[in-house]
Figure 1 (spheres, helix red, strand yellow):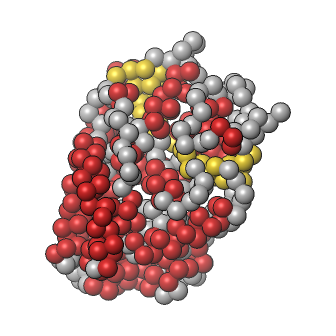
Figure 2 (cartoon, rainbow, N blue to C red):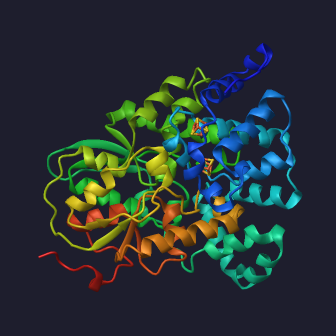
Amino acid sequence: MQTNFSLAQLADPHVAESEKILRKCVHCGFCTATCPTYVTLGNELDSPRGRIYLIKDMLENGRPADKEIVTHIDRCLSCLACMTTCPSGVNYMHLVDHARAHIEQTYKRPLLDRLIRAMLAFVLPYPSRFRTALKLARLGKPFIGLFEKLPALKPLGAMLKLAPASIPAASPMASPGVHAGKGAKKGRVAILTGCAQSVLDPAINETTIALLTRLGVEVEVPQGEACCGALVHHMGREEAALASAKQNVDAWTRAIDQGGLDAIVITASGCGTTIKDYGFMLRLDPAYADKAARVSSLAKDITEYLASLDLPEPVRKPGTVVAYHSACSMQHGQKITRQPKELLAKAGFVVREPREGHLCCGSAGTYNILQPEISAKLRDRKVKNIEATGAEIVATGNIGCITQIASAAKLPVVHTIKLLDWAYGGPKPDGVSEGRLVAAE
Ligand code: SF4
Ligand code: SF4
């Protein structure tokens, strides 16, 4: 794509980076076929190619964002299916991240929208605030119907709907410390405790630590970790995202310096995509660029790390039919497609893949709160495809997808690690009834 940025504009490294990305796009439109918002809404401006044109026009003319561009960029899930499809290697992720930061700096959203976004940014990345908010949400549940009738308050209705009826107790394993591996030492890793996941399902990290230590891997929960920053990053709040990234880089650099790390293990693929991008996000900061690049190179999804180990034979082979839902951040963001399915199959599960596996479930960070209507359409389409597999359980590697799919599916939805841990000698996962786990033999 031809671009017409001035030399003065290109002196801004963010603009220069976006210009490089724009020039790679050859307008072929292949990406439209796999874009969930184009497939759902049928409007070119809600396709990757349409958004690329809008972003180009805004940046090239040095214009502040307007209502039209904000509408279409807000509808983008950042699912990155377009990046998987694009034959020209267009880095849509970095382009839309830049556009979102530009929108945040130049566009004044309506008051209620600003308040809701500010509340999400204030609450979600902090486990104690999120826990309190979920408790308060119980009081708001009777008003869901009312909020859903008023367009500006729909996000509040969506938020209350997603809030679980009960909240598990905080996990003692999330506290900083070292969990020694059993037997011969196979490795040493740090684990991201995370924010929303640690409140909604602390058992995911507990299970991960239990399985890794049983396999002989030492696991450190480093002092001073923060939310990965993805939630605010996708809202265009660059400063807050970079502050979180730096806090984590500092925490993991201390862990590297103290005992070395084979990997930084992440159990939510949405976080993994962002941490693997820290090297890019902090490239312009001389105090952090090298450290951030090292952290990004060590970041591994738990399935990616497990696949790199020489695993023993499973203790039991459940034979359970599992529908594997590949989160967008897993398959498009991190290009991890093989490992989770292979690990499940090796552990004795029968893995089925739903149709249209490339399409997002509509969760996408805060998307299911801020764009509840498109999100619900995508969720229902996903659940229909999952249920058509005839599976007994759904496995996935991202807490956002677990919450989203479980809000409409009749099947139990569990994190992949819980099924693997069960096969390798751990307890039966919560929420899976005994009858569903039938021995293979
Ligand atoms: S990130 Fe997803 S929703 Fe956004 S343009 Fe790409 S495919 Fe479409
Ligand atoms: S597939 Fe790639 S090159 Fe083609 S229009 Fe989409 S982003 Fe541009």
